[in-house]
Image 1 (tube, rainbow, N blue to C red):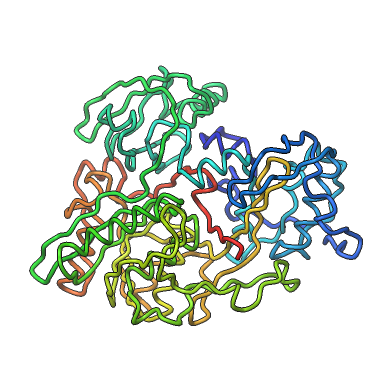
Image 2 (image 1 turned 120 degrees about the horizontal axis):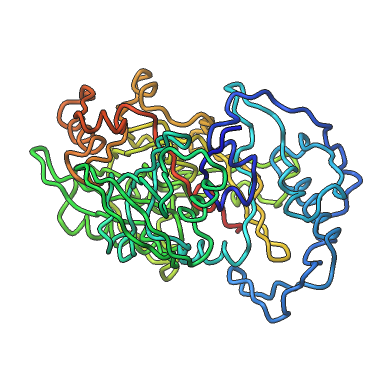
Length: 518
């Protein structure tokens, strides 16, 4: 098999996830496997909870519950038993899980990795593409503060196999990448002297993975080609990067009114305060006629934050008493939720992720919103689109097809590992949630729902009024039509507009929908 450059973080967690992420398994036939059929023979997961190979000290506190984890001495067998019972209790497709011997797997994580449905969808994709684990300390650090080891670069890949092409999608403020003047559109050429574009040598690819997706604080030298064709070499040292999920907030003055713009990259805890500040800033300029919400690189996160943002866009008149998202579980109703508990309304007040809970949220009160989307628009981001359409706010989609992830998780922690298995599907106020193949701008327009299919444009900064996705949004406001496709010779050479929709390699916690159990 031809080596493929992939995210080291993803690679270390699940080989199957890597193959899916790089497209190598797309269209493959489905596997079989014996149905679990073991529900009546399994003890409750609570019988094995917190019985660990390596118990944490009794004083170790769960930052989410503010209670001790309560670990005690156990074994690999008790950890695997917890996983198997928990999957049987909570997994959305528990009856499709193969009956596999726990003894064949060395630890709970490797056992968990295979406890998923082998089914294939009608379009040839694995039914479950979203099964993963995370070390609890890493999950807590990223979920609570957005901290992640790296350089502050968000790469977009238009090709993961030679000739390989990684382009800078954006950089995080106040990071090494920003201070080194690495900017959107820069292409990666070499890493530590290795030909990034053309190498097919497995050992060199491993070295590239170690540098591009670092797991230690070792310095690496990168050569980039700028949009002007010049090359620039910089040495970067991985460090903890605190993400800034809300960027480029501004108001654009047009002939038909004021238009707000904000780039929203992550539904992490810190985004709550930043979104409130952004909406407050937009309101300060006077009433807006429209908002352009750029979520092309937003893979998801906390559903409650998506609900807050949807409320802030639509306002109270359209959202009062309406469902943001209702979640459907397996037939066991594993969390014992009532219909009310399984329903997230449009939050009119802060939920306390990074602000004081219970504070009234500012609103724009819009009947229409333009969303800039791409393959990196996933999960909780798709919920914003679906929920607003569910209350008849017009959502004009400009860009590419979204990733198609109407599913979500209640993260479960046991013995230092946080487990994520699909446990629910979300539907909007009208009961719609069937978008596993994503929201498609072209087909949406064909069905009478406004939208324009436009490829990503790395030759302009995000928020630039001439950028290829923002410009059509502004143009559609004026004319009600999509612009003709255009490209410069430089863009054609880079295959940035005419080429495939780029792939972003992000940690799994930035590509999913997370629901806080009430």
